[in-house]
Length: 374
Ligand SMILES: [Zn+2]
Image (tube, rainbow, N blue to C red):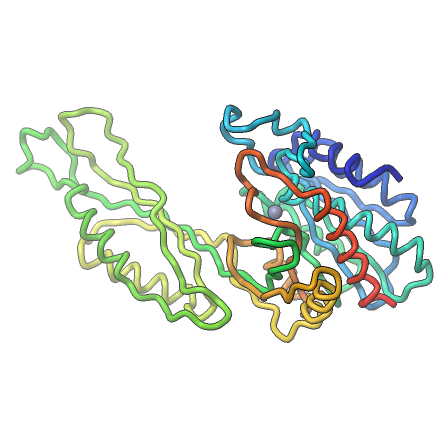
């Protein structure tokens, strides 16, 4: 087996911008077949999925990962080509280094070491990978892999997202808020700006609508989840001329909502607030992810102990950040954690992972396997 740096570099070289995989899953397959994993690869829509299983005996330990990455963004903000890995000052730079090709590399090497040392371990290891995590095709990713699982329940689930904040091991995620996107169209009556008496300018009521939506008090902070938060993401009309009043104005916004606030309550509060200002509007709701929480989590306790042994840090449990694939697995697994390297550079230019963290992370993953499968 070649080195971790080699594997990670080869993965970074694959320009696997979501939902494409390029060669990532083939590269990983070459590592897993000699370790006696059975591989099921399949395409769903534009998404490549891979399900690697070394047996079906219980307890089932599953690693959830993704091979896709987000766009590189403005190239001039990078010191290197984002898809040509750069090794500098103890780091590997490249798109996906931290989210999450580095974590995936660490897990593959942890598995290799574990199977070499403990060929007769109890239970089984599954590695579930999709190229559809970062974009709009996530429904073709992990939910489709779950349909192909040869078991109905997973005992331990490790999602390899980058969760550490200042030091490797300081944060483990055990849940996430939900994500709800809203597209609102407020209708008016367009026409010539010189004859406003024949028109009803929909732009005029927007400041009040925004103000009152922002004043909605959704819920209280609890000790597990942050408060529900709403952010406006776009406001536009389809009007291109300077002497026209537009027919409609469009507002887009997104809520990250905690489980204390049901979606129906959110819909009612927003609908009622808009109705105070407009009688003619349409609204489209898109739920990108429901919230999940893995309470009383045995894997959290195991991982905390391993991290403390290796790094001397006591990790905190967290539910912050965007949505993750953990939400899809929550129905079939009671012990889910998300844990990986530092997340400070993810989705940014000059994304990087510390090479010594890559070694420590491999050791942490290896010890988690020992604690759960021996
Ligand atoms: Zn990720």
